[in-house]
Image (tube, rainbow, N blue to C red; front, side):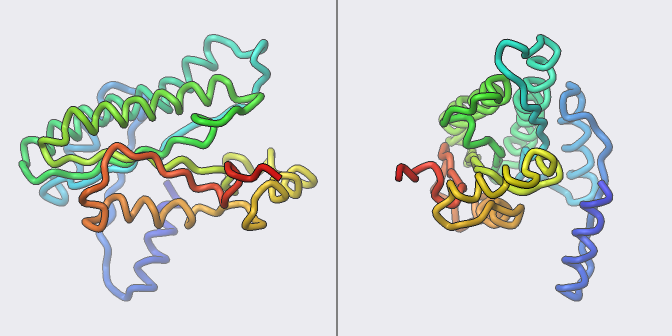
Length: 216
């Protein structure tokens, strides 16, 4: 939460105008999280026009050593959370009768193999299925659903895994010559939320610097 506050302050300083920021303490895997988020948004802003499902966990583990608790925690946070929260958000958007945009952060692991991420990849693949079905189910309400699938992005979550030679190895597989940074994901997400993407729904955008098409 502190990192979000710091980022809001940075944006506010750059724009020179005040920005409204509301904190909501919630466990995304809890069934009540969606209602908490929607109520906070409506109470403070009058409506909810879009949401980004960005919470996630990713623990590397060999397939034969993956435990039921690990499967459960990955599904709870990466899939069940967005599912439940989307239910609450869609109900509110239908009530508002003004459409909206819901963006899920999936992963390149959902469509391409990851040796030690079988449980994580499965949870993200479920998100792709959810995204496509919701786009069909609620297009008539003017609600758009899209996914962004990052490749290897340098974040606090994978800092240890990308230390030393591993980082150089990963960079060598990216045609653009570097790993991604959070800003590389944020900008396409803003696009999907905006009216510039008003005729785009049910899509999955892979953002990986070209690594998924790099054969030789």
